[in-house]
Length: 387
Image (tube, rainbow, N blue to C red; front, side, top):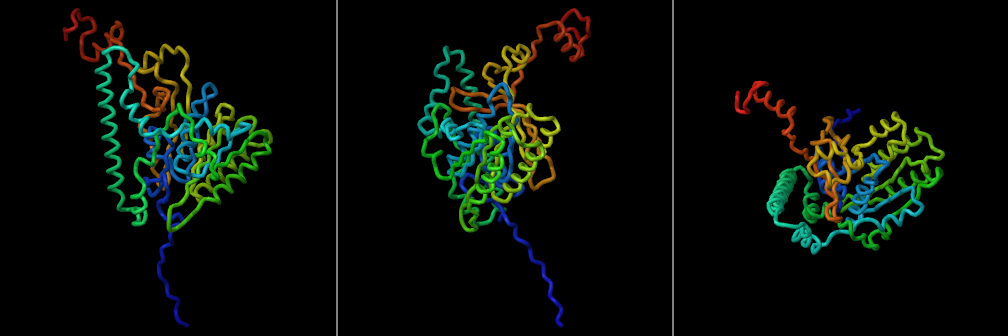
């Protein structure tokens, strides 16, 4: 009997490498990314949300800042024509879609750039405006360098993906939205937009079925553009959603959802009130997610915080980064900063900025003495220049 020949055959990856879809781009370690809707948040979390990943946001009971992030996430998916599944404790979740921001037109962007500080009085701010223009130019330069780095890494992408990515402009990855205008009704009334109310404990089993059916309908074409679905779950463990559920049933749902997202090429954005959960249960939730964020309200008349931050009056809340995605790598990803300020500019757009600490007031005796000792000045010197 002839010996059976042996040969090494490489097993093809089921995902086929990078995802070829509108609104997706290649990321590090062989993953694909989709935008969160906020360009600042995309930069904070490493370029975007990994396809197949889960983003969890811990809510603040005193402020609905998590709803801003949720609105941008949903609006970005609708702007790209991506399928959307939205589940909420509201009795009519579809009515919430009417509060999503609309895509800013080119005319609106030009007007905002032409007169960004039209209402500011006096000429004292002319220098500050020039400095702001300098910051904008530096940001544009940084974006240009990032695009050049993406092009330099395109050699590792298959040729078909190169052709497909050439048809999608870079600026289409992240849209600009205007909070003052509601989204067009035709976008959120599309056939690929589904809504589900989570009121009552019996609806949770229906949610799991809806998520599985939603992911199974996503196209997985091997020769053309594919679809990336978005699942938005608002206040998942709110009291009205957990009437007949145990902690372990919720954990099992999240575990199964994570596996479904990995196979179906979809992303999930979940908000939950962590203060209403047990500490051990909340910790287990945080281990299941890929990206963990939290929002925090600004306390009224916080004199100590106002003295520490230069732009305290412009801040409406804080964003904390607790965990970043580390898919296809064993090296943990660390954020540049753990806290960011949430600002709303001209009631039009949301921006996230690193906290700017105010300079220390050295007029007091204690601070002046400390500074003098650090400069090797004698503690009892009679003159400031006596060293």
